[in-house]
Image 1: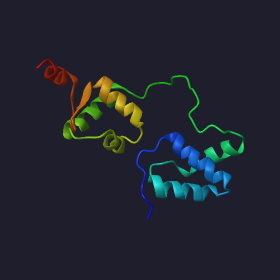
Image 2: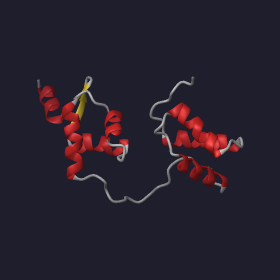
Image 3: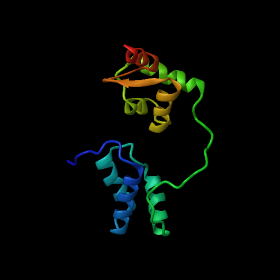
Amino acid sequence: MFKKIVDPADCEVRSVIRFLNANNVKQAEIHHQLVDIYGENVLTDAMVRKWVRQFNDGRTNAHDEARSEGPSVVNDGLVSKVNEKIRENRRFTIRMLFDEFPQISKTVLHEIVRNRLNYRRLCSRWVPKMLTDVHKTK
């Protein structure tokens, strides 16, 4: 059994794809190995094929390319749903929220928690920012 790697960087996974592809490992086997090490939510088989195709076409960079801002997926309904989940369990992690809302990236969830809901990390709990500011004045 392999040791699992939790929450890998996207460029790390792409670099592994590039390495295995350079070693002439088949696309299905690359996907299988990624799932073994990084878990079920790493990349779909189709995304692995896409990255193999890009590397075969000459791409050498495993990092994201600069993109223009797209439309935001964050709306008031989504923010309230995230807030409800947080209120159910204050000892949540971004990863736990990601499991509840897999359609939303961890980065966007973190932005919702920090900026829209104004939660801050205090010990092992997320608390509203105004509570942490009150503690700072004491």
